[in-house]
Length: 161
Image 1 (cartoon, rainbow, N blue to C red):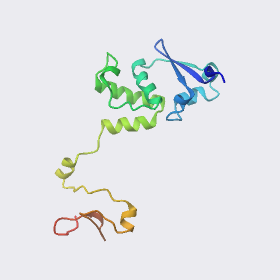
Image 2 (spheres, rainbow, N blue to C red):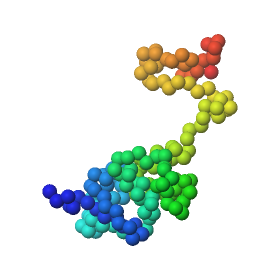
Image 3 (cartoon, one colour):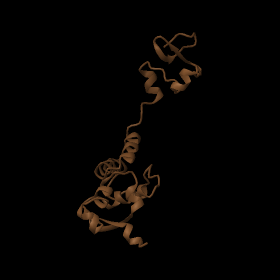
Image 4 (spheres, rainbow, N blue to C red):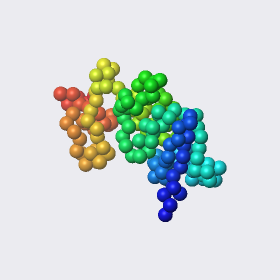
């Protein structure tokens, strides 16, 4: 079978990138599956021209190839972007291209959950994770209790928190 039949060209600010069918199917549906695997004109020409950052797209090609792209390496950044700007712009490109899985990961990296220290500052007491199966089979981790108030931690005296 002709290998060119399953390649697509993305031109960003004059720079051409070649994608395979497997790459455009990564994190689908996305912009490329819509363009190239539909009735759009781009499906017949197998080419799309956009005004997006080629430097950021190079990172996205690594992602589309199945590689872990985080944390971003300084060499991968566009010379005109700080690491912080690159992350924000990568989020914008993930939104544009419809890469939802990578977008969720980027948002988690950029906005991590509160630390245990912050949780304890507000009077909350973090506990080990407990599954429904643990509750049903009464296999609760030490320091976790189930009562009429719900599932929660207990202090050294056995008092429900």
